[in-house]
Length: 264
Image (cartoon, rainbow, N blue to C red; front, side, top):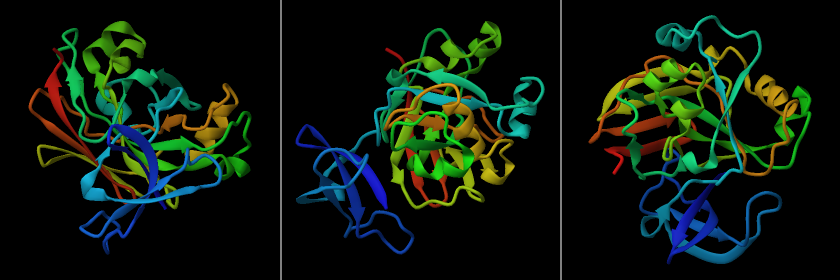
């Protein structure tokens, strides 16, 4: 099931995509069954169908927090010069104000001269949870979506910690929707900039798998419905500039595209 969040006549609704094409992508016959309320629990349709072509997708959730896992792909650790592989999941936070949706602008801040894309698989939490054992992790996950952990690489290297480099407004594109039926164990993740392939990775290369990540995060903090965990980026991250178009694609989920501009 694909759960999206859409703007209809200036109001925001959750909905379920129906009538996808043979590849599982939206087409001319795709509609969205709007939900009464949120998708965290029993799904309750409100009886309305809207054409996919007539609405605007927004970020599929607005999390209370985004927990990100750093250094989870060995080749990415090597290319960024970030030291040794961690012995356990390395966590940091991105503010909820960094979240944007499909088609929204990534704004490059004046403080940085070197901003990079980072294509990532994102976990969307479906219920309040704390200290979840790995064998029960599947019970607390609503689904998965695409993410771009946009990073000011020069500030990351200069600061010695990552809050400023990864916390700017617009530095966490999410979308295009949440896929609830998704096999993360062997899935391609790639990133194209202006149509050129930059990142070409696979979840099999993760140092820490989904169960390990959720177990580790919930051992530290309580997660709320709609919270997001970013699972790390494969190698191939490179600078982006104003005028670029960045597309993160994950097989089995879809594509998330965002244009880039300088911050006004």
